[in-house]
Each structure stands twice: as structure tokens, then as C-alpha cells.
Amino acid sequence: MGLGAIVVVGAEQEIFSSAAPQSDLKALLTQPLACVEVLGRSVLESMIERFVRADVETITVLVAAEHSCGVEPLRGAYENVSVRTVDDVLSAVSDQLRDYSQRSIEHSFVVSANVYAETDLLDLFYFHREARQVATRGMDRDGTLDLWVVDCAQAHQSELEGLLAQAEKIGATYFIRDYVNRLQHPQDLRRLVSDALSGRCAMRPCGREVRPGIWIDAGAEIDRGARIVAPAYVGRSSKIQEDTLITRFSSIEKDCYVDCGTVVEDSSILANTHVGIWLEVRHAVANGNRFLSLEHEVVLEISDPCVMRSNRPAQQETKNGLSWSRKAREQKVVADPNPKQSPAPEAWQLGADLIQG
Image 1 (spheres, one colour):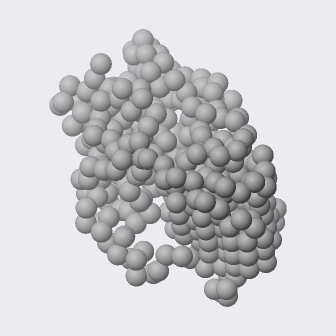
Image 2 (tube, helix red, strand yellow):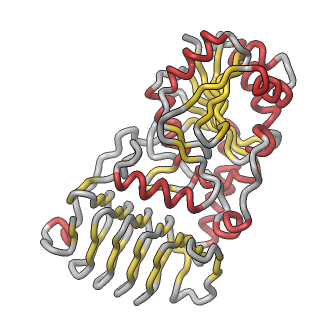
């Protein structure tokens, strides 16, 4: 079939002329939203999995150099996926299309990692091929998406940015009726969590569904005195202490610590976040010592480490970032494609009332 895919991380303005990230997003996160784990897996990895299931022959992830530290290793192993950190993403996309053409890959998806779309990718490809256009762009009821299928041979021979702009005016568009989330704001992340936990989209949390609507990932530890009300998710190796309450579409991502008596309601606690004792986290996103209130649309930086802090030492963050920068120029992603789930922690495996469906 000769079909490839190029996934762009962190340079949407340069390639697709997308809107700039909002200020509260920059204040809350140091990485693109697509690289933030949602229910145990990043949107970037979910996108890669969809391409793999669509039998795409080769997938290239191009990461803008300024975001190289924000892309962590994936949970799955994909033999046909490579990851590259590049300084000029626009040129890298053109070069990759040229490489695909030389390898007899006739067509390629070109997509922003921030676009989560549950469309039939093969149907989109067939639509593009039958339309006989240089490029076909996906769109939904809210407008165009940063999701294209392009003819590799013709695309690399032209100036890519102009070609996409011209193709948008005269080319075909493919209407997507399925679930779409553009991931432009932390509110979009919260919406994706809520939609996944309630079954409004195809995404499902990692780990085991130990009660209807309650997902617990590998290595999580939940005290017998804690209470979890569906729908909710607790990520791998996270610790939930006594008298805590996790409820209403909340997600506790990997390596988090929620201390005694704290209530987490309709909120996301992002990976490696320590939340202190007897707090109320409602309608919010917490990331290390940064707290975004979605009701008031304000980001607070918590100076008291007893209230909120990052679980990841600064030295470790720097080390991980340097390691990625050295290796990700041309890296094969390696991990277990079907990670085995650890047995349920005794605290919730044997308890009766601490988890409520």
C-alpha cells in the first residue's frame, strides 16, 4: 500500500499555522499537552497505536528541539516507529517525505500530535487516493484539523508550507464525524479524561477495571481508609493515603502521592505530583507545584512543598532531558507492547467499601 505517517510534536505554528498555546498552558506545563499522560498513556502514544492498527508501514515522530525534554519513553514497543529531535521541523517534514518517496512510500499522514481523532484512518487514506489530490485535510464540525494525507512524491518537490496552504483552498477535505479533541488547553485534557471515563470516546484507561468505572494501574497503593467513587483512575505506582476521597471523573496519574484526608474531585493530578494533607482539589489540574483552577482560569505556583510539590528531583529531570537529547536524534522506541499488569494491591484487592462504583 505504501503508507507512512509523520507526527509533529511542538511546532504546530510552524507547520500548520495553528494558534499559539495559551498563557495558562505555558504556565502549567513545560511539555506539549500531547506528551502529558492521560489515564496512563499520552495522546501521542494513543495516536501511534491508531496508526499501527491501521497498518501504516512506518511512523516518524518529529520533536521540536525545545520540547525534547518533554517527550518521555512510551509504554508500548513499536518496531516501525522512530523518534527524532530536530531544530527545523518544517524542513524535517519535507526531508522525511522525500525519504518516504525514495522508499516507495507513496502517501503519508502528516499530523499534529495534539489532534486526538478517533476516525477511520484507512477510510481517510482511501478518500484521499480516490480524490487524486496532492493533499487532503481532515475537518470536523468545528473546522479544519491539523491532520493531512499527502502525496509524498509531489509534496517533497514543492515548498511544503505553501503546498498545504494551496491544497487547503483547492483540495479535498475529509469530514470526521467521530470523536475529536484538539488538545489546545488544559480544559481539553480534562474533557478527554471525563469522556474516556464515561465511555463517550474509545479511549480507555490503562490498568484494570476493579469495579465498574474504577481503574487501578500496576503498582498503585491505596490505603484501606481511602475512598474512590466511580468513575476514577489511579495510575501506576501512585499512593493514596487514608481518609482521602477520589471522585467524579478524577485521574491520578503515575508516581503521584495524595496525602491523608485530601479530596480530589473532577480533577487531574498529573504525573509525579505530591498533594499534601487535608486539601480540596476541585475542578483543577495539578502539576508538581503548579495548580490550575479551571473555574477561575488562573495558575498558582505553590511555594510551600508541604502543600504541593513535584515528586521528581530536579537532577533527575535534567538527567532525563539530557539523555533524551543525546539519543532521540534517531531513536527506536522500545518497551513492552502489552505490559503485564501487576496484581492488585492488597489494600484494595481485599477491601470491601473503600472503592465504590
